[in-house]
Length: 320
Image (cartoon, rainbow, N blue to C red; front, side, top):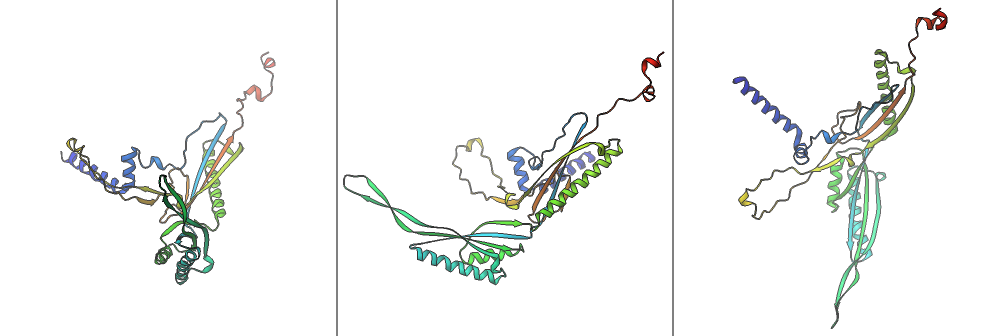
């Protein structure tokens, strides 16, 4: 009895630990989509395929997680005014203040670019009504709208907090996006290709130990590469618990509360990758993927030669 009770408690503790590790996002995916969190994260579908008897195909997937060398944050400024001159003046006052604060926190002028987006007139409707006629709405000029974007390049991620604070002081609250840049992406792809072929050499060595010599086969290869940036890897979810009404309460009026939407960085998982470079990710990274497919066409197997075949003696002569 004590052993059964101990086993029950152990299972309960293990179940609790798994729930804590899973997190709210994983729990929500199970609850509302009826799938395991791992099932939806398969980055590369992999399946075994039987080819012809003398063909062998090997697929190798490699992933490289790279920390960005620089970042570019884009802030949007919007200004409205009654006249074109007033609108432009008001925006430039805020812009000059923002640029001055960026200089104070160490952002050089060469790392800032101001992009003119649009300068448009705004209209409103003026209503007039004449006797014995319908109301008439006429568009009349109301003012102007000016929008500029500020592109800011920086190399230290922690600096973004100070940039956002400087923007808020000038009533700039719209951060459009943050781009991540790796200085030498071609070097990353070259490294991925090298490690993929090294991995292939190990496979060929293992096959040779079993008697399958791939070095004598006809070989064709195909490869593909792609990259995932952090801006495309953020997901949203809502974590909350709600109550169910009893049968006698289902016709009552229910006022629901606004549920906050959470966002998080969801990196490309390493589930189906054979090789992973820089496997531990602390901050959002630029993730380079490389896929190598190698098809070996082995020589046709010749039938075993008999003793008579080796001596090249005709069968009819040998039977005499």
